[in-house]
Image (tube, rainbow, N blue to C red):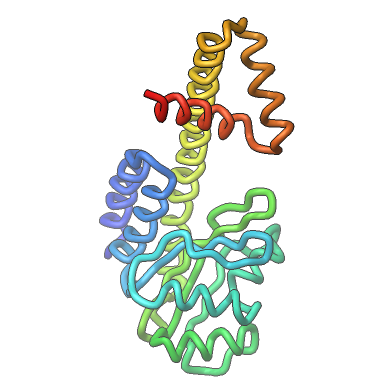
Length: 230
C-alpha cells in the first residue's frame, strides 16, 4: 500500500476503533486491521504480559496464540524483553527466523517451526504490572522492512490511543453498573427491613467486610435473592 492510501486507511481505522463498544472489541479490531493494512502481514495478535505470565488477549490468524504461548513457556522473546525494559525500546523486529538469532534463539527457532519467517512488534501499553504489545507475523522471511516497521508503529500509535479511550469508557461503565447495583440493593434492604439509606449501606458494607467480598458482589447477591423469591 502506498503512503497516501495508508494514511487514508489510518483515518478510517481511527474512526472504526473509537466506534467499538468494548475493550475486547477494540483489541480485536486492532489485530484484524494489522493483517488488513500492513503488507506482508499474515497474522497478528496482542500479547499481554501480566506479572510474568503471557496472555493472548486478541488474535487474528493461525498460530498466533501458539507463538505467544512459546514466549511464556521459554521465558524468552521480544515481548518479554520489552516488558523487562519497558522504558527502553518500543519496537522490535526479527527479520529472518530461518537464520540463527542471537537475541532470542529458542523462540525464533520454535516460531519458525510453526511456519513464521519474520515478525515485528510494537509496545502498546504498560499499566502497573501489565504490559501489552501488538505482534505482526509473516510466513516469509524479510517481510517487515524498516519501511513497514514504520507502518506498524503508526498503526500501533492509533491503536494505543483508541485502547486507552476504550479502557476509560469500560471503567466508567463498570463504575456506573456498580453504583446502580449497590443502589438497587440498598432499596431492597430499606423496603424489606424498614432501614434508612445510611443503615442499608452500612449493612452492605459490613457484609462485604465480614465475608471479604466486594461490595458490588454483595449487592448482586441481594438483587439475585430478591429475584429468586419472586
